[in-house]
Length: 286
Image (cartoon, rainbow, N blue to C red; front, side, top):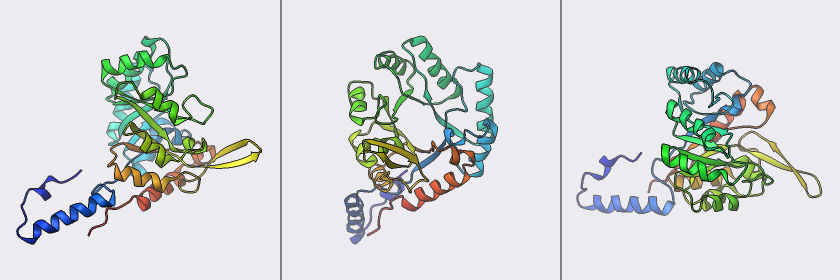
């Protein structure tokens, strides 16, 4: 967050020129002042751990934002949901999103997702509807509850694997419907994550920070293998540059599909945190 106090005092003499020069340099650098990413863990990465231990893991690794997936059943009884909320709040954890949540052509089934989010104070739901017709009733619920939806992408053969398809879905929808950009899968589909982020023109609400290495097993067939963050084919440095330039206010949720990394996620999470810290662009001072 920018500190307004730095602009309240009018510099004397050459001080004004110095201030203007610094501002111009900052703008020309393409970076927002003091930008730093908000980092979370996507609890799919902690799927080998039961709920309480997953919360403890996050705290031990100094991460206080969570995107819940396997650790939250949005259709569970109210008492169970509130008990889980109490557990994460007791640890100083903020759950900002859940999903990828199943959706239905039945609006009242989808309402259960929004009721869960409302009960728990969660402002975003990640979805990947398997029928484009579902978006009509989802949009009605977004307007009713004022809770955001973010559409997730898997591989190129999935419904939302091509960013052009996602842009077409969003084009005439409520602005509270946006994107959960899975970096690993968009890379596996053959796209540059930094460019895709830019082409979504401000509609990226959430990012699953994942890296994959694309390997050719035979002609015309590729396989995407999860790697540690920074060791795959994803343009992560370019993406961080774009996020800084946009002063992006969303969350980077660390995620892996690898069952090996998930079995003992410490090395994956620690390495990802170190990578993000080391590669976050810093606005140069004149």
